[in-house]
Image (cartoon, rainbow, N blue to C red):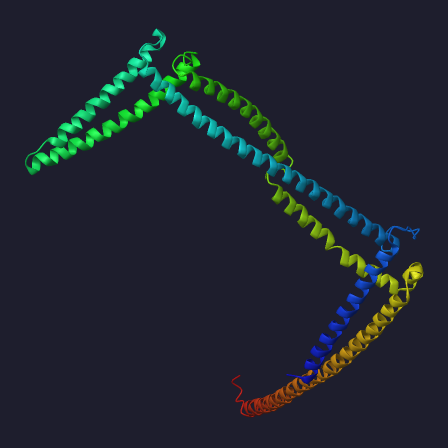
Length: 374
């Protein structure tokens, strides 16, 4: 590989390092200047690529970030409120579940009391008869199981016995479950009809109290769920504060990504005569040192660019020389071919002359020997 190309690569890398160093200096300078300006309005022209125009863009971006941050704070407050609502809803649902379970136990208790009472209202008699029917089925299956357990016999008999016992146990479990449901339903209907006081005064009073509590909890729960829905609606289509906040944070990051470009532009302007004049009151000793370093880097960059051009020029010269030699060789080859062609042409021309002379000799022979027949 041509060493000069290696030299160019090394110069390009050094030049790029100087460019990056100068860029960092200008970015830092631009950021420092914007902070120094603060809330002042020192520029008459606030448009285009001028110090005033850049300052206006900078403040616009700052406002966007402030607005986004305010929205995030509001969303975070809403998220906290949503969490409180969720916790309250969960607590009320737990309390509801506990009361409903207790009410279910009371219904069963009242249902059993209905069947144990010696005398009940005739309107509740069908309920008691239904329960007695289930009790009769349970007793029937229990008795059948006892008989099967006492039954003895051959292996085949025992296999049939086990199958019958399994069926009886399944039916017994179903009847007992049905009886439990019947007790609950009968108790609920007895309480609803206002007939439970005579059967179990304590249970009746507690059921009334629980129903009042459940009604109050249901109202509280409906209100909380409505408030929760209103909060969720504020979070947009996804319905989650975290996703909405993440989306806004991405927008903030995008806006912040524009700041380095503004800093760099202002830093470059500070190095130019017009920009330096407009920013002179904000350029302190440290900023002047930065400008001197940036200028030194610019000179180094220029020197490296010139060095690169020189090396490229020497390479181009050699390339052109090589091309010239290539063309000269091609011309020489063509000239050789021309010379060979001219030699062939001359040979052909000589042959033509000799052929024409021979023709003339033959014609003369014919004339000399003409016997008058022609």
